[in-house]
Length: 265
Length: 316
Image (cartoon, rainbow over all chains, first blue to last red; front, side):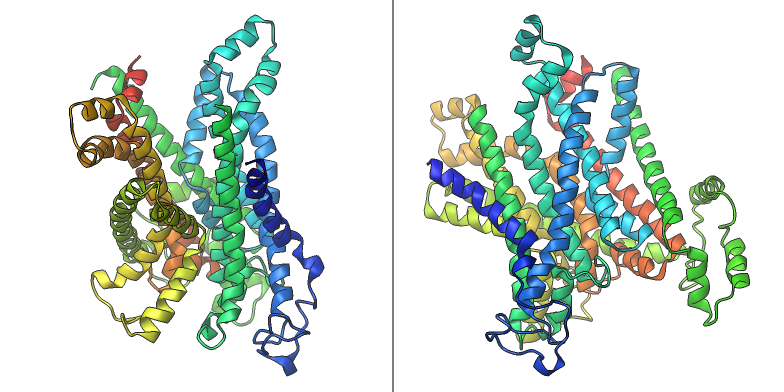
């Protein structure tokens, strides 16, 4: 049972690390164009063949995850830490200020993250920075709202009362007693949003609003090769497999987190 | 409606208006922070040679020389009168372009919402009924795959196989429902996979509630309890969340619309991003936000009507 649990959590994390840092193992330079070897079948030099410009598919696949998964995990880690701290800190204010803040929060989170992505792309054009900022901003506010609501529920539980009567201070109650109860929810939220964001980023780069001209990513690989889907199915299929594996791992991590929460409860 | 309820409603509406203001302000401020100068982009599109005087002229013509606050207030004033200016790319009024594209998006999303409702009810119940057997496990795996697969891949697969291989549908020239069905189908897979899982979980919880136990004691059949007692409760839990999900589809439709070349709202936004077409961007962002906020309001109202416990808490 314990081994199975490690497997359930370890496998997705391993896949994500592979997606993120796989470019260290790339056999060829992903940018180097080899016009003599266009669209070759898999061979020893090019383990998964080459694309229409003679670039090594495997190297491009391994480099492709760097930007997408990097943006998503970096953004979400910042969001998770900061959002949790700020959400907890403001969950106590019940005065006029709190009501105002809550209305602002409600107003801002009425727009889903993917819409923010569209708005940011609309205003800033596409690029790594745009994606990173829009993801961080939209998820940050959502997470604050989640943490605030959950913390308010926890606040009325008996154990908080006990902690307060035994003399625990405000910060100790928040970070020592309440925080551990929120972790599984937060991890679940972060994982599910990561999966959504990977799909959104890849989707936008598929329709031509990618991460920039020189950045390799899976979405633009699919859009470059989907015309040749019937003659060279691999060129489309491999990037999609990688996209699929990374979103799947985020989903599995999210599921594991929510199950972990059930054990505690 | 008593005073408390009125206060609640008015607070919701003010939150809604604030959210619209926030989004439009965001699109204005980001536009200003953008590395590309809209005036320069405008001149570059219209004439082959770009001079500094031309850019300065365009800046005055587009009203970009005034401070941002004044630009924003003028835009809001015009928008309240339904005046959004002309598109920089085609020269036609923005409102006309929007009125062409919004119905397309709404149709796609409406068809996919109908598909989602049918799919979720079907697969959710199926999953609950087969939860112990191999079929149930298979359905769980399938739904996880369904969430993780990128919708645009489904779309290109759909075009490749159904249109090219089997000539099942034609890619262009469809009329009526068939025009929107392929896009809606690709859009709805993810929602079906996600919500059928949730519905199955919710059903399992409801079937262990006291009222189902009471129904069992009265000698009702399991199927009758499932469909007439547990299902309505489970559905009411999901409905508000589902309405918000439709809002998400509205934004997510951009990608699928592009693959199927449907001239919807997302298509318009992306087109104007490529062309740096500021009036269209601002107006379509506003309309997207209006639709999202309305759906969010609908979700809140539904939640409020369907779930008595929230209503009593608000009344306290």
